[in-house]
Image (tube, rainbow over the protein chains, first blue to last red):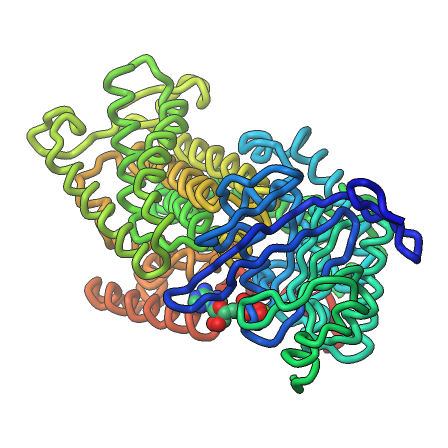
Amino acid sequence: MKDTDGSYITEDGRKIGGVVMEMKNITLKFGGVNAISDISFDIREGEIRAIIGPNGAGKSSMLNVISGFYIPQEGEVWFHGKPRPQMKPYEVARQGIARTFQNIALFEGMSVLDNVMTGRLTHMKSGLFAQAIWKGRAEKEEIANREIVEKVIDFLEIQAIRKTPVAGLPYGLKKRVELARALAAEPRLLLLDEPMAGMNVEEKEDMCRFILDVNDEFGTTIALIEHDMGVVMDLSDRVVVMDYGKKIGDGTPEEVRANQEVIDAYLGVQH
Amino acid sequence: MFYRTAGQFKTTYRDDQALFPIRQDAVLVAVILILAWAVFPFIATEFAFQTLLIPILIYSLAALGLNVLTGYAGQLSLGTAAFMGVGAYACYKMLTIMPWLDPIVAILLSGFFSAGVGVMFGIPSLRIKGFYLAIATLAAQFFLVWLFEKWAWLYNYNASGAIQAPNITSVFSGGTYVSGPLATSFTQYYMVLGITTLLTILTINLTRGTLGRTWKATRDMDFAAELIGINLMRSKLSAFAVSSYIVGVAGALFVFMWRGAAEPNLFDIPLSFTILFIAIIGGLGSILGNYLGAILIVGLPVVLNTVPAALGLPLESAFVEHLNLMIVGGLIIFFLIVEPHGLARLWGLARQKLIVWPFPY
Ligand SMILES: Nc1ncnc2c1ncn2[C@@H]1O[C@H](COP(=O)(O)OP(=O)(O)O)[C@@H](O)[C@H]1O
Ligand SMILES: [Mg+2]
């Protein structure tokens, strides 16, 4: 049942809205290598959009283009129906786009709580002098934001390690803290680069549940990169398949699974 | 046992964010403050004021400034002394041009000049990091000391090329002299203590809040910091500004509340390194460490000079100097290799042990 702008209700009752982000003919080169060749796809409001493909396909590069970390040689990124002017990564973040990284990028010298609090930085406005004086504006802001952060900490069930330095945490927990930092920003679009890589089965199940809950409870739009096909089939509404920088498939998990080119290039190969 | 934390639960985030969430820490800080404010100044000899109390505070403050930049924001600087010089010369010129200005106000204002110069020399940090940035700050160090020598306007065209702290009174000391030969050590100590306490409190507030987290994120992983929404330019330059402000005030205090006079080469590299050593030995990324480091670096030569002499074994002054250098050198190597978080971390570990004592865990 599709609306004129293509919005629809999923089988499990979530509302998928219009297009929030559209990649138009993106080409990204590193020297002679085409990391991304002329790829277009869109992301709809409220959906979980997966990007899959073998190693080196250009998936992380695509997220980095969305984040403004890489500037494509050709193509445009459209956000909320307008072409996005070239902007710095921190400006992109301030538009409500948060992310996690394939290789965990936490602030190792800080506690879990402080790491998650950094997710709120884009929302914190008090100036240098107010912060130096602390009492009043800065303290109020700190407490208000701490409350939001504590909700995220509860949500991801990491209360027990709140005050622990992140440096010594096991890998799976670090991934979770990184997700907490991204969620603390209350993003409209959440980018997850292999959130389940390197996890054991239980950790993967937890992470899957968190991702579904975030999408369901907060209506957050999610674009995620994942290797595990089972996970992708379970989680995502639509899938983009990349191989050697090219798009070879785009559609629902079922459509993608039935696509011969995808089967040849990706599903047939053991990873 | 002594540091029993059981039964101390935080029921609000405000309590949890209090400066000293553990009661014993608050008690300890209170004891230190009482000693510094109400005990030391009444029992200290002139010698103790001049060789320990006042310099320890001033060096702590300078190290605090450096620590903001290097320990919190991760930008290495070898130009601390030159920024102290900017503060000192700015204060000197302000008091020359506006003799009616209260010297304490002048000292607090002089930090803004060093902050401006610090930001200027911090601009390279937007492009370069680590070792290369250290070299750039070294260039600032050379350039500024050269400027202090060559720009005669800075020292009012004195034949000696030195600046002299004039005799001036302040409302903050109740109208007594705070600088120049007529000022007493007692008054100067209180002025230095007041400013150091104030700036320390403000710095603690900055480092525990939004800006502190911005700096630490920049230090720990700059690309991730930028991708979560931190403007790296603002983060780094604000660290240079705050750091240089504190360092500049320390420089003004150095000349006006302690040395009484200064030549350009006073602000040369050896002083930069002394401050850096204090920050390293005390602990990068710690507030308390600056004080511990300064007590050690300022106190060690005094102890080496006086203790053996009191025991009837006076050491030759050249030997004391060498011994001092060897011990400091050894400590630097120890802390860089074994405990990069410095004395503050050692204290933290001791505190942790005290919390669980007498049980091992
Ligand atoms: N910063 C970079 N510099 C040079 N080449 C890069 C860079 N980032 C990615 N690449 C290249 O781009 C291609 C795609 O990489 P990536 O996006 O990381 O793939 P994926 O995430 O799908 O595994 C690879 O060939 C990789 O070597
Ligand atoms: Mg990748």
